Image (tube, rainbow, N blue to C red; front, side, top):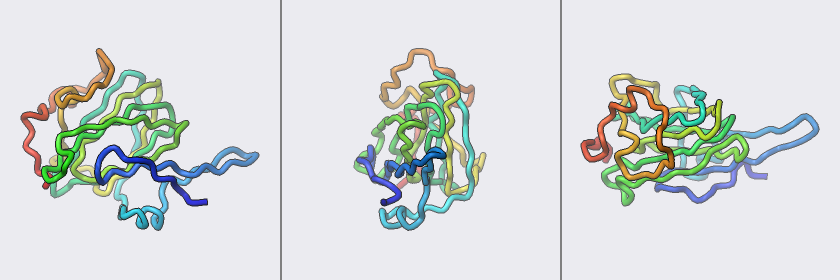
Length: 182
């Protein structure tokens, strides 16, 4: 059995994967990363840092990214709960520049999302204690950390009063952002 089924991705370069589920009398086993399988899909990813966030229902985090020379790709999945995961293309040379896409990640659907550099990422927690795990290709660099205001690029989050950090509220709007991503 192959380790992943590749599902249609919402933006170029993004990979949406559904890992195989192995089940027996002890429970389940899911493989999140397999270097050869990723390589065969044209994804060459080595992570330098890994972390997770736990969010209550209604928490919105994003839209986050790092700018060059510390830009990074991300591999993310939801290990508990459910989130609406949102991507925004910031690559000037992309046919989908300034377009956004959303999809659900959850512990139940086990989906893994590979996000190449040049995309902003954010999510809305749809359940209490939703846990999102991130693997990134570069280490967090505060001086290269950036973001786009969550409500400035036309995506319908279907939420009226999200819980936001002071940092996320202060991000510039998409119309004021000058992309460094070619």
